[in-house]
Structure formats: C-alpha cells, structure tokens
Length: 261
DNA sequence: CGCGACCTGCAT
DNA sequence: ATGCAGGTCGCG
Image (cartoon, rainbow, N blue to C red):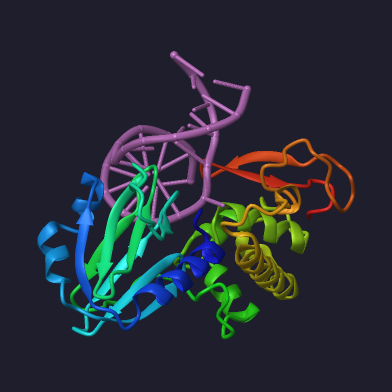
C-alpha cells in the first residue's frame, strides 16, 4: 500500500495510538523483521515512551523519549492494523503493545517491511519531501541537472525527491502532460513547475481519498481512483487514446503517448 | 545503468 | 505453472 499518501495516513493512525504511551512489548513474528530489528533491540525499547510520530518520505519515525528513533518502512505491502480481540491474521509480522493496552500490528503479507532502531538519529539520503513547501522548480532543476535518466525513473529516486512511488509517478506525469521517457535534465523550468504542481495535486488528492475511503466498504470509486495506473489499453480520460504500458527501470509505467510530451 | 534478491499472495 | 505486485539495496 505504501507511497507518501498511504504512509501519511498510516502515520496518523500510529500517532493516535502511540504518542505519549510507553512501549510494554514488541513481538516479532517473522525472521525478516527480526533481522532488521534484533530481539535485544526490540527489548531495549520496552519502557521507552513515544514522543512523536513523523513521516519522512515513505518512512515513519517514532521519536522516543530516550532520544532514539524507531524507524518503520512498509516497503511494498506493509500497513498498520489495529487488532481486535480475535486471533491475529497470519500476515501480522510484528505487534507493538503500549501501557494503556493499545496495540499496533504490522500487517505485511510479503514481510518485506523494515523496522530499525537508530540510537543516534542520523541524516538519511532522502531528498526534499514531495510535499515540502520549500521544494521549488529551481531546486528540482538543480537536482536533475546531472541526471540523464528518464523523468519517471528520476521521480522514483528518493534521494532526488522523497515520497513518490510507482503509481503516483505515472499519475503525476500524466497530469503534467509530460512523457515519462523524457530525459530528466532536459525539462525546462516552467514544465518542472507544472510537474511539481501536478505532484502536489496528485498526492493531496490521494491523501483525501485515503481519509475518505480507507477501511470503509463504501461504494468504492476504485475505477476512477487512477487516471493511468493499471489502465493499459483503456481510454485516456483526456483524449480517449489507449493508455500504454512500458517498462522503465524494471517497473511498469503507464502513460498516454498522445497527450504526454 | 539493468537485474536479482528479499518475501508472499494473487490473477491468469 | 507463470508472471506480476504501491520498494529498496547491492551486484556486475
């Protein structure tokens, strides 16, 4: 589930559950999660209090009163689940319990999620957050200046801009009418400005969708959720031409060859 | 750069 | 059985 909008929503859930609470236990049910967060590290978090939950790009950081940070990255299929009384789904890979009895369960069928403990919060190599107000077209142009890679691939590079993944990269480029194959360093500033606006619109719409429909069984507007993603051969909503799928950097890119230049 | 690895489940 | 999946890293 996790690009910026989904992680933003997940972080809000974690915040509601965890902030101000101290950890009473962390159970790791899959070897992959024990690899990233060894049991003794998990044990050392017992008694520590969550001061804040922040999102950076696609990762969530639990700032602890000890000064450490518990960092969670959902990778492909992670999500928070608030357990009820019944048995936990088999796909729950970790359970964090708090002093008020609340629990946060990491639900991740593929078990690719990473939990890690930073003793001293270090600088990461993330570029500016995609929703960072300070991110301007000029800043983006500078980051792209030396990159002779397709713009779609550049948008997936978290060291250039943080938070965009495979779905919203395609969606934002469609909205900005930019061909995903364009070399990143050849896009003029005005078009980068358009692209940034498209990114923000795409992501904020997705966050709204998330708040409105996540976990609800309402008549799902799933068919209209994406304009190009997973719509190969379906008609473009702007010009009616068929959406194309190509592979870039080993991943599917969806676009309209007719209205994206 | 592209590609496999990391994991599991789902659709074809 | 095969291929694909909303991510990232490390390899050649």
